Length: 342
Image: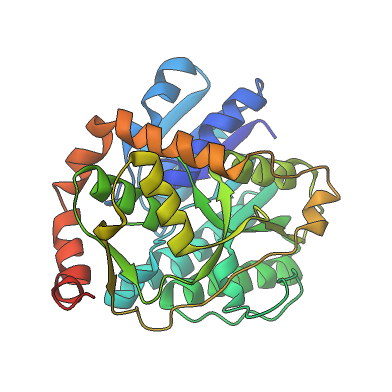
């Protein structure tokens, strides 16, 4: 692996992985392809562009555009593809499923065709624990059935099935990781933590779905990036690996911790109508990845404090985001719910 194409590399997890990969692999050249939709942001890569001149390049484009993808792979002699590119927010998938099918499913198909055409050394798909669906008890293992409950989760599960088919039909060298609820710097403020942190900074209400007792396995983005890298470089071809923080928390408890860090009152929490098909709990069994030598290293409470501090100290990054396209999404998603909030 020398010339790595990272699709969706201007997004949250993607940009953190770009940074990690360039630091961890001095002999790699990394090429980022990103459509720069609302969640893709070149500000996420400002330090990368400056620090890694000569080993990093960026191209704006859509993974669903065959001509763009094929030309990029040919021009830069790409030997490895890591696919982060995806529409990724469940709420938006409920409002507009079409974009999720086009990017997450058709876009993955185009990348697989390119990998087959150019005999790529490794195709790695970054997936999600949401493909398993709701897990009331126990822990999801890689061989469990996929039972997605939102258009987003279904689009990611569909992509995984395509990847499996290309492995079985064309012997394509693929790997997949399914990550748990990831948090950290550069996360677009539609997701729970950055939304609530930035709202709390401005003393705005925090629209908490239902009773807030949904359970998520919280994983710091650097631990997630390390997990992806371990699988990409050491994982067995054709295999899927869970990447989990092994840190289950109720949403309400995480929000209370965040408010305490900021010194803000819990009265900011407003319980609003839950979203349709909201999974109650996700939890991953990570023994398979641990066997490769990976384990989460981040202490949750310390990482939460660092994450809160990052948003406090980087208003330049998120204020312009929340003043743009985000406003209309927030209105559609929360205005009526907040008007009826408890």
